Image (tube, rainbow, N blue to C red; front, side, top):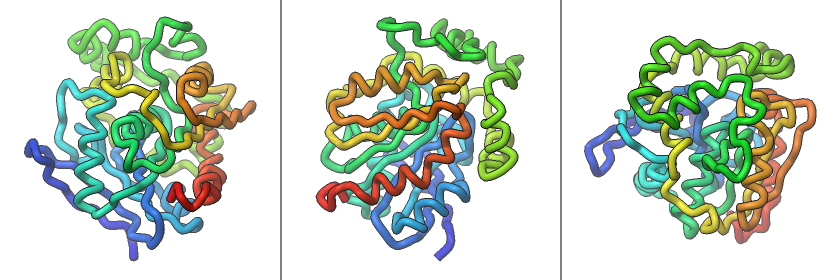
Amino acid sequence: MGTTTADLTLTDGRTLRVHDSGAEGFPVIWHHGTPQSGRLLGPVAEAATARGFRVVSYGRPGYGGSTPNPGRTVGSAADDVRQLADALGLSRFATMGASSGGTHALACAAAMPDRVTAVVGLGAVAPFSEEYDWYAGMADDSSLRAAREGRDIRLKHGESHEFDESSFIAADWAALSGPWSALGRDAGSAGDVTAEAEDDLALTTPWGVDLAAVKAPVLLAHGAADRVIPVSHSHWLLKTLPNATLWLHPKDGHISVLNALPTAFDWLRNLPASRL
């Protein structure tokens, strides 16, 4: 069975566009980064299917056909995912995501500890904190700093902001020209100034969930050379989450760390049967 796409009507009337690999196996809900459409990327589906997992992805509000939800928090993704899982008959599932997607995957685990069996976050963003320099190591922190100044300032910033190519190291560019070329194409076509702003506003304000509530095992993978989301974010998450492991990739950046995805699926497959 090939990947299917369908629109789910949520209880508040919004539409959530959902993509399903249709494969047999334990379900994994994939959360995309910023900006992406939520379409199920080939490398994600292939790694999941080869290891016996069914993977489902969706567009966050404002992306890829999903209705915007102004003022959304990171934690509000959990209610969308709960309704998605109910519609598909998924009583228990793992969550995975890259960059801001890893952040939303963690929030779902915090909000649904009885349903989320495990979490994988690759280059995930930690909650905004003044315990350490949250911005240190970012090649371009202007969008996130603008978000801290409020919605209007972040929206204005997005009208003229251009991607800083120094945010990616050579390994990132190699990944985008090779195995992760689909991600680059998807991000290029998914750009929505307002949706990106909503992501940044959610990342830099309280999530609305408590990470101490995450009971599931968590795998964090982070490139030590990441110039988009510095590895200090995963170190903070490692310290804060009750049951987390960090895989540090010394020579990887924000994109090339995604090459660890097949091994991350192996980690998920090798968890005790009670977790699946």
